[in-house]
Image (cartoon, rainbow, N blue to C red; front, top):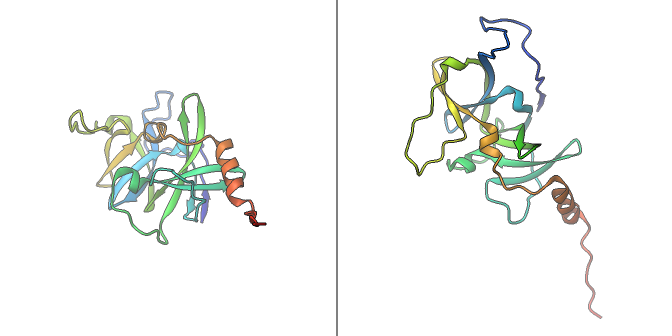
Length: 191
C-alpha cells in the first residue's frame, strides 16, 4: 500500500478563504493509542504500508532502521516509542507516513510509524488552541496546538520541531553502513 500525496492546493472551496493570508491549513490525521494527531499535509510526501527495515546498530530504540525509497535512504521512527506510548506489534493498518523535515538549512526525508491514517482536515488557524502548560520539565515545543475536528480532539504536531532535532546519520553515512551490512561476509580461514 503506497499512496502518493499531491501537495497542491485543493481545487474546491469548502468555505475556506483562498487568499494569501493562509487562514487555514490542511492536516493529515493519524491514530496512535486511540488519540488523533495531525501533521501539515504539505510536509507529507507519501503514505506506505509497514515493511521491514534495515536495522542501524546503536540507534535509539525508536529508530526502527532505514528503508531505500527510490534511491533515498529514509530513517524510520516509531512515534509510539518516541512519545513513550506502549509499543504494539505492527499490524495490517500500521503505516509509515513519509515526511520532509527541515533540519538546519536542509530538508531530510523521514518515515514515521503510526497505528493508522485517519483523514485530511482543513483547520482554520483561529480554531487552533495552545497546548496546556505542564511546567518547565515537560517539552511540548513539538505540539503546534489542539483543535476539534468532527467532534474529536486532534493534537497538531510541528513535524520540524518533533523530528528536526533527531540525531540521525547523514544519508551518505547510512548508505555506506547499509552497503557494509549487505556485503557478503568474508570467512577468515586459519592457516
